[in-house]
Length: 233
Image 1 (tube, helix red, strand yellow):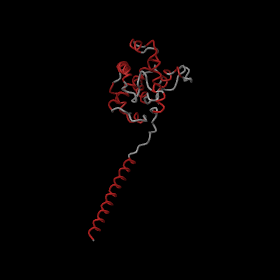
Image 2 (cartoon, one colour):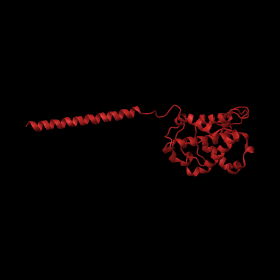
Image 3 (cartoon, rainbow, N blue to C red):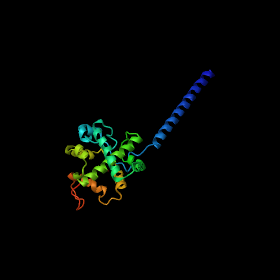
Image 4 (cartoon, helix red, strand yellow):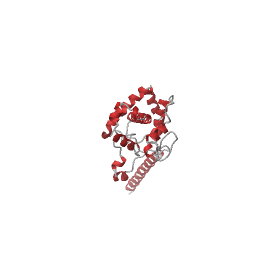
């Protein structure tokens, strides 16, 4: 009679040990998950994606139509024409301001973590593609805003050929889309790096106000016509 009782006790003991082991693993896994938990967003976070229910009401209203800025719509096949134009602007920019491309890349690398923290969503790009995208997009905005300040009389032949009035108007709207943004600080940093010694240009904030002057309802300074807030945070 003693043996069956002993076997039954042993089974109970084994089950108890198994339960304790599983419990310990469960506690350990949950502890790791809790400890690795990151804040929902950093204090610097300022660029978000439109919630799906809102987007579904009018997809086009929240999607860039001619140019992508930032990571969320990067690589969209419908926007590739302007991607080529960004490369052209980078070439002309580096030649005109006599700046080393490596210096531009290093500036972005130094700010990479701060740039990433500005985005509320996971960035769907490799580090290599992300840095390249930031450089291309930030440079394009700087060069475009500078050319806009100087006036269309100083546009290049290619500008007049590519930047038709309808495209310019639509591009301005694309720049204001919630998902189509770069952090303002990195664009401003590249601008200062390139034009630090230039006295013929205003601040990048003023250039931004000028670019959006059509939508502005406030007066920035006596020397600047009505303008608007910047396209980036």
